[in-house]
Image (tube, rainbow, N blue to C red):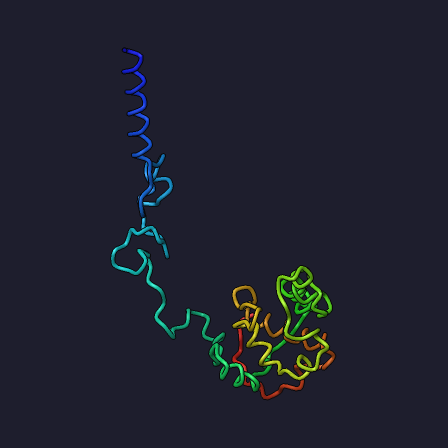
Length: 206
């Protein structure tokens, strides 16, 4: 009888412990050293529900729409992410201080573009080979790439288009122009920055 009582007591204790650790909603249950996992100080863009004033519990507020970060005024891109913006970007051109030392455009293309488009723009990168995406045109020597303007290529790198996402997070404005130039070189169109003396592009930071 005593053995039965001992076993019953152990079962009840285990059930109580396991019930106390069950997570419900935002409650994750019991945790070891929680103040090591969750900072007590306010941290930028923290979403730990620690701030009841700002949205999502963030400690910092998001920038006001339409504002530009300090020292980034020169990187302003005038066209929005829309069909009209893409059409308007036709007139966008290389900045007057464009330079591509040490073939940086080719180097960056190798990092960010070859996984899909291949080293020579044949759309034979590993992503397309494995059927993880489908290009809208056969290769960079296609008429579409030959005739597309450099401004529209820059727009695509900035916002993305079709299956391709934005590369603005990885490529600074001048680097986007460098990749643009290399894309035109691969197409055989031979579009050179020297022809764009009256550039409408804002002067980007390097």
